Image (cartoon, rainbow, N blue to C red; front, top):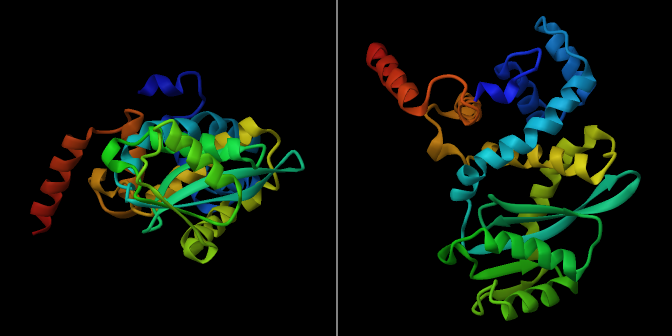
Length: 255
């Protein structure tokens, strides 16, 4: 809704444009400031930072039902990677399916069985019963067997789930970490857990959309369809039905 941008000095489309670019392309706030200036928009990099902190989590929340709906396969790959926060390492727990589609993520200040349980419990509680995994593949970290065993006792994790511990089977998620790190690198480290997680939510949702996880809800293909999907989540532009009719009319004229 346009009230989401009430009090801002720029139109909602411009704000979402800046947030989407930052979260998708691995650039710094100052670089994005220069790119906007080239297009005649004078926006300070600190303003862009505030936009990202406000709207990146909103994009992730409003589109969560979209990108998660197409991501659940029955074989989960689970691992954690390192993120620097205030000069110290934090741990980003992540899960993808066998096709590399994002399932869920969680940022934790510690690497422990409690953190692993919190992440896996959060991911599984978000699933319908038929969406829960058949297998969960992790490396040989000792935290995961403890976490999965406790979740099975609590009946959050189905008893039939097979836990496979083999690092080489997780090459897909390791590669996905690398793509995410490419986006994180220009930040030069986060200042707090709150700002880190808010920004990472933007990175993760844009990565999910880039993988095609919103494709079934896009009227137009490719990047333009992603842009409109995000804009519609905030009530900007025509609704999906109107956009679809316009698209059909365009195709009829082209024919």
